[in-house]
Image 1 (tube, helix red, strand yellow):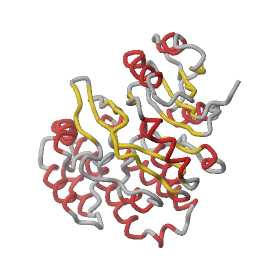
Image 2 (tube, rainbow, N blue to C red):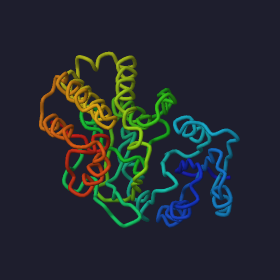
Image 3 (spheres, rainbow, N blue to C red):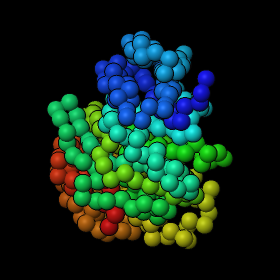
Length: 318
């Protein structure tokens, strides 16, 4: 059989509710030279039956044991045959021209290892916001910018397979930023390019793990930075200012966690220890005087007004 140009990685654990929408969005692509590598991470619902019903273009793998997402993604990627690898979670949606707009950017510049796009964030009630409506991300060697302000949307990303040879993939110790660490590694070594169109729809869940386990983000960011420094020791001096911003954001997340747990005074103490006093610092300091029950309200209000409160995806770069 001819090797497909693009391998589309779909990891699934009990995703039957939205899975057909995700798969249909691949089959509706104007670019047709692709395969789906589907990793069923021990689903007990109808996900497997749905995936297999789409025929031979879906290469289906079933795991008897449910493993962490980073591990599952690595297992799935190891099965990929394509020259390029794309990612789609089973609750997100691609727009029809996504691959057709991205693949030519790789062919135009052999130094490009990753191409991402704009994205629409949505929920079951409708569209919420466009990720890059106001802020237009840079292209090229953008490790500095990503370390300062990580802004890549996972289902929008396509990577060049040859660029990941010898590069660690998803860190299986991490639960929330395993993708960010992987793509930062690529950004340090290669160029990244960008399609200035919203070509994916990223679904927001009010009970997502990122929101319900906010406290883990700070610890994971600390570990991620240690990993980067161990692999690229020169970044400590080369990106000293960005390191300060990165650590201050992790500190902000740590303070938020204290506030969520009802430790407002402790949250303010953590904030005061930060070496960066910017507008985010003062907003967070004010927030710690509010009831911690307002946390989720503030998070989702941010998607409407593009404010300061979603520190994970839209972090302030001040």
